[in-house]
Amino acid sequence: NNHFYQKSWLKEIDFNQAELNYLIDFALHLKELKQKNIPHPYLQGKNIALLFEKTSTRTRSAFTVAANDLGAHPEFLGKNDIQLGNKESVADTAKVLGSMFDGLEFRGFKQSHVEDLARYSGVPVWNGLTDDWHPTQMIADFMTLKEVFGKLEGLTLTYVGDGRNNMANSLLVTSAILGINFKLGAPQDLQPAPEIVALAQKQAQLSGAEILITDDPKEAVQGTDAIYTDIWISMGENVDPKERISQLLPYQVNQELLAASGKSTTIVLHCLPAYHDQNTSQGQKLANEFGRSELEITDEVFLGQQSYVFQEAENRLHSIKAIMAATLGELFIPKEFFND
Ligand code: CP
Ligand code: NVA
Image (cartoon, rainbow, N blue to C red; front, side):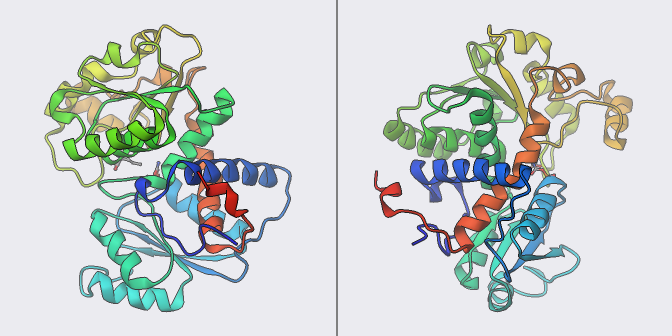
């Protein structure tokens, strides 16, 4: 009776519009249950492994707390704890973990690794971020938009900054699936790869979403409902910071760019972590080396009235809970729900 039962979520395109909308609404529902202290132990007695090759604050915490809230036991397996892809093939690790755990989360570099984990483990696998995609983040982001605007229909979302990373890919494709107009502002070298744009265009034809990719940051934000940005150098990327910073400075989300939307209701989102202040060792290093510690977003905008970044971060918990409960739980979902 559960349409999602035993499904993995490896990349956004694995789910269609109705399925993504279901997960967003289910996450909103689970948030309400949590706020009202109503128990929701959909995964009583299950065991979940959390594999992390890259560092994480939000994703790891959200999976851990979500598993506990659902009655499941989470087990963290960091890059120094297991042999994945190192001493042991991904397939062997997958078979072993799949024989012990009921579900696996993977955060790492290669998309092929998360896909192999799903192929060989025989249990649901959730992508907690790879170099290519960040699907669980999408439910939190569109859930936040729905909370703020009360609906998703008719919205326009803008992403500015590094248009070639996992976040840009995910936001572009998810907007296209959901029928949300999407504008991306990035220098030509850092615009999404042609195959990602083609995938999004195909979805946009089905959903009616409009897509605009431009190197003009002002054009990208003009009339938009939400401005989204992400760090300029992603985990595992090996680029010259000086070059990247000078390339992306015109795309910084500052008061001027925010005002260029022409709407006082435009909100600001960021998946975090963000480089907006000096209160980190990285911020101090940047300030010393490049004379600035505010990179993709200014402190003023990050902490300003139009920023919803912390609500968005909290929503990682509720959305990851929805994804795990849907794919591993004994939910009753009427069949008609997905007949579109
Ligand atoms: N947004 C996000 O994925 O944050 P973490 O890297 O802290 O998990
Ligand atoms: N693009 C960033 C996202 C972090 C959540 C990275 O991959 O490091």
